[in-house]
Amino acid sequence: MFYQIFVNGLIAGAIYALVASGFSLIYSTCKFVHFAHGAVIASAAYFLYFFFSMLGLNFWLACVLAVFLASVLGYLIDKLFYYQFRRRRASNAIILIASVAVLLILESLNLIFFGADIKSINFIEIGSGLKIGPIIITSLQVFIIVSSLVLLCVLFLFMKYSKIGKAMRAVADNKNVAEIVGISAEKIYSWSFVVGSFIAGYAAILIALEQNIEPTMGTGLMIKGFTASIVGGIESVAGGVLGAFLLGLVENFGIWYLPSSYKDAIAFFILFVFLLFRPEGILGLKKSFGNNNKSV
Amino acid sequence: MISAYLIHILILICIYLILALSLQISVGYSGMLNLGHIAFYGVGAYTSTLLALAGTPFLLCLLAAGLVSAVVGFLLSLPTDKIKGDYLALITVGFSYIVYSLMLNLDGVTRGPLGIPGIPRPEIFGFKFDSNTSFLILSVVVTTLTYLAIKRIVDSPFGKLLEAVRDDEFGAKILGKNTFKAKSFSLIIASLFAGFAGSLYAHYITFIDPSSFSLMQIIPIISIVIVGGLTSLPGTVVATFVLVLIPEALRFVGLPSSILGPMRQIISSVILLVILIYKPKGFWGRVELE
Image 1: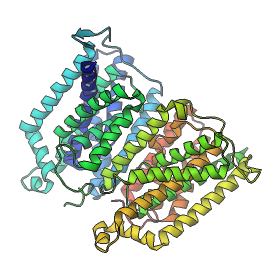
Image 2: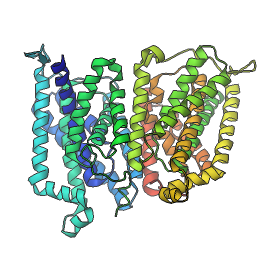
Image 3: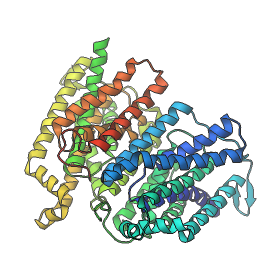
Image 4: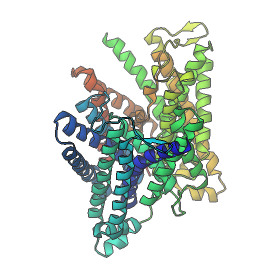
């Protein structure tokens, strides 16, 4: 039983990790909360549904298109909305509310185009599952864990060694100094939206395969994503990933003892414990919160 | 027929107005970006409903709804003392989501997604507010009292202290003010009135389910606060009328009902975005959101 719950926690954690890493990536460079990230994930899942189930395209082609369109969507959200706020030096709180409004617009559009009923993508047969020792796991779940880990490794290498990744870390660390050495912060903001939304699209495919697609799924995912980010340390992508796996494990171990309806409450309980005792998160540095916009 | 519809809209405006005015205390006056206001509204609605179905008189239900919400508000203020701005906003969103998911999952108490039907209309000293017209009068009275109470609170020395905490928390601390107490009280007051609004809503519609209290319902309320302008109570009143009436106009365009709901959300979100971009202080606001 213990191992089974451990594996279930890893599966949930793998999905949360993808949500949280995209969110943290954008937060760390742009320093504002991109709440609409959840809606980008939901939209990408609908793109996949549209190409694969409605148009009948090849599954892998549909995946590539969905991820590509997710990146484009992220880029457009940044250019159309957030850019306007940056140009006017709006505070983080204003951008956050704007991002919730963007989330609602995207959710409503998905609702109008695809309807409120729950959609599912039946590409991989769930089947009876493999039995490895005491654990039962479906091939899809193995695929989720492996592909999520692969993407996170690629992301890590990208951030560490590629030119854009280095520039992103420079802007995240100190925007003004980065601009002095010739990095265009505006360009890096766009890049972080493209890369963050790419991860969102990738996450959307895994979520669409494992769960169902519904218009409001983005909000719930986003809440898990930022809970993971806050627990791990919102300023670092690694922290977000760590927090995500922790969250997945604690949730699944929690419902071992409590009724499963308390799953969300358990996540929130962890969040509160961290806020009280370690508000900067596991990997975060100590500083005051909510004042990023003031540090010029 | 038109007049019955108008009365319905006016009652909704009253409920929205109580929510928006109370949100002004936390967002406008104390500068705490509280996006979990709907949770208090929901707690109030469920408290009032459960008590009313157990046979409690309306006035006690209303009072209890406010008090229970206020206690929840106090509990939320404990861990969020040192947290500001967008970080606080995330926490309150999370809080709202949890309250919503508890409503959905605590089947034994809330009947989950089925909701609770058959909530009695209010009855005060033998007079039953059965018709919508009489309910409108009750709502207007409660809303007016709320307006006056909140006006009095924000004009009092306590209101000035809240503004001082918003503008310079450190400075207020240096002057020996207990800023935690001030912020905690402001959240308690805000949630108290949100609880009243929830009680009114439950007894008006006579049916509640979790979907009325999902966290995205905060958007119309926060839009009202922002469009009217932070710290402007008259602005809030005007904005409530405008923002409730504009999406209602869609009803007369003749869209199918499955598109009507999302279209309304799109319209209010677009209004919010436009105001945030071009007039971040709103129409009558004195301060900008930080």
